[in-house]
Image (cartoon, rainbow, N blue to C red; front, side, top):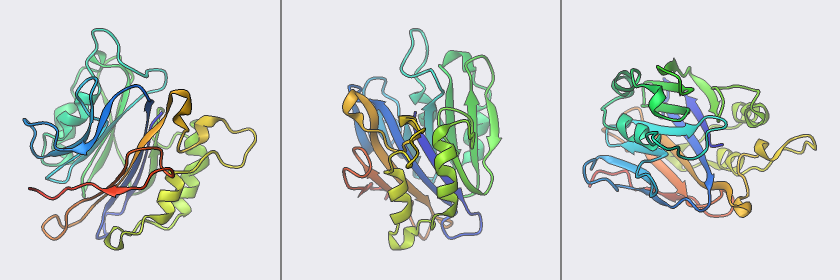
Length: 252
């Protein structure tokens, strides 16, 4: 189960802060974020080498999109389209509203169930499909939100129940001064000190058994794209075990 944490502050210099951990099978090959698609030169995203799509990406207009499996739907299925196509399709658009309008009428039966986040520096949306028809589109309100393999801010998810209050209380990141300390620590956290908690409570899962947290991202979108570029910090391993490094988002 992957995790996305979103902080929306419409009046701030950095209106959108997003942190994401990708949980996946270790054997599934992937590439770190880059401009991997010649037919999409304005897209920077991680590339899934198996299906050719992405789990998380950003375009030069300042749209960010990330897709996650719903509970019980890990991996591909015969005759079903790859969910990694969805984030790329969202990144074909100049703003989040246009991307959502283009995708909201997709036939969810063509894909295994998914959660999709689409956001820019003005708006953010959660698109949900349980695989039986049209997508459900929900605006993400200002403040802190979390999404895993269940619904947005659904505290039946042990991870959300344990960590959403911690993110709400944490000092927000300061992208201007490269200060992500508190969020970075939370994204690397194991399970809280609760003997009843399961391994799925952990924000970062040890991948030594063949499945776990394989990468992490910290993204910030500025209010004025003319004055600043989006920030993307990426770690190509379990957060807390490898350092975050800057992804080049500047247009070549």
